[in-house]
Amino acid sequence: MSIREARVPIDGHVLHVAESGDPHGRPFLFLHGWPESWRTWTGVMAAAPAGARLIAIDLPGIGASAGPATGGSKTALAALVHSLVDDLGLADLTLVGHDAGGMIAYAYLRRYAVARAVIMNTVIPGVDPWNDVLRNPYIWHFGLHAVPSLPETLVRGHEREYFDYFYDVLSVDPSRITPESRAAHAAAYGGAALTAGFDLYRAFAQDAKDNAAFTEPTPTPLLYLRGDGEGGDIAAYARGFRDAGVRDLTTATIKDTGHFAQEEQPAQVWSRIESFAG
Image 1 (cartoon, rainbow, N blue to C red):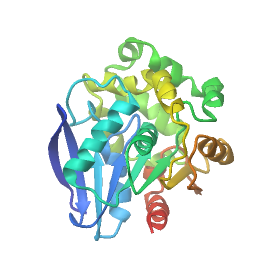
Image 2: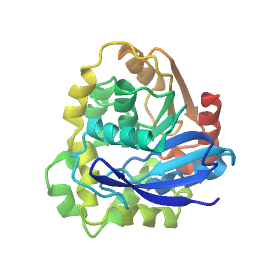
Image 3: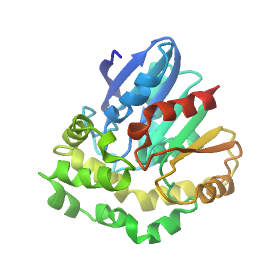
Image 4: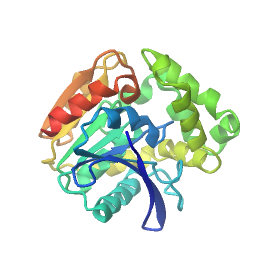
């Protein structure tokens, strides 16, 4: 698989964009979560046919993407993604987001026209079962990461070891997240990028308020994917999306995966996305 990389100026930011496949093909835009970079999608991109246009970015402030701080606001990040979509002329787009990238995808589909969206392995702030997740003691890192400055103090210089904890605990088979991938993700959070990553959590309270403002139904078709080893009741997530106004919803589980489905079972993830996109 050949990767074409570029740095695209967007609204005062410079976004790192990695592409593979046919530059004139049907586009799929991938948004990573925490603690990852665009490289989390390489297996999915490799599983896709050559005729598709596969685009993965480093989120603003992370990896090779640079620019002013966004504070982690999913609304602000969705606006930057929308500007990138316009700049690249992506028609008939399938927008795919994992973890915090899925939160951005939700903010996007609520504000902008998009052909279809895929949200993976995440809960959406303000959308059920959001409050249940916040009360879950196993999700302790949501609280820690939201504290100003403290997580940077604790993690800086130990990014690889700290991130490894999450890959190891949240994966069915941690060996599927390779040393090369782990090293690339850790490197993407050096310097100020570490704060950009934790800011994704610090914005959750505002994200929940922003999402609560949308009470009208949305026509955008949405596919929600969850690893079968991740835990949580996918039916509860489906109810939350429908109650929030998502009328065209499909759900599916990815077999033999935990939280990082795109790295644990990339071919299976692509198959689900491709089938959904028709």
